Length: 195
Image (cartoon, one colour):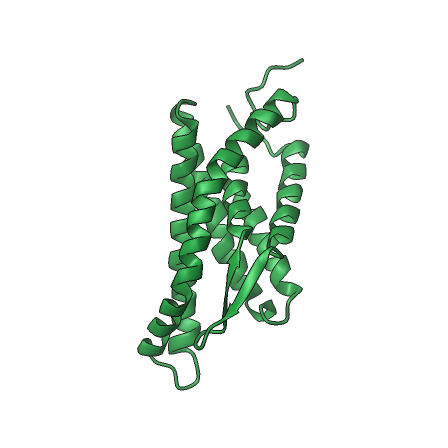
């Protein structure tokens, strides 16, 4: 069955973009000696949620919402395009993995959403640490590989916290939201019965 990009899915895409944007404000910024700042944030939960609920297209919502947040903050505005790619990859990979597993069957929904969240967060942090290594290390004035590695190490505590919180919270939240949307008749499932 060919999936179409319905008005409902477009509305959910806009809603999730707005939620990602707003969730980026729930953060505690910590200055680090090398590589700018790091932050404890709840945005990764919503980025993973985009992929779990919307599938691969959820990557667009997670990337766009995060990039729009970056444009509102002079500290991050110059790197908004990088954020679009890295946070977009989080939602994209979470959606690809979760939906690929769901195509097989609907059993063990939590395990499939958990696997999607882990894959999405792992992809994001590989890209995030690569960006940190390149920008704070190799491409920095008087930069070096050692400087890049030091910048990565300084960001590991907040990154681990953010990833663990996203992996723990996003799957049960996605299940609860999916059930509530289906029960109210607002689900995204293309196979839903016609009234």
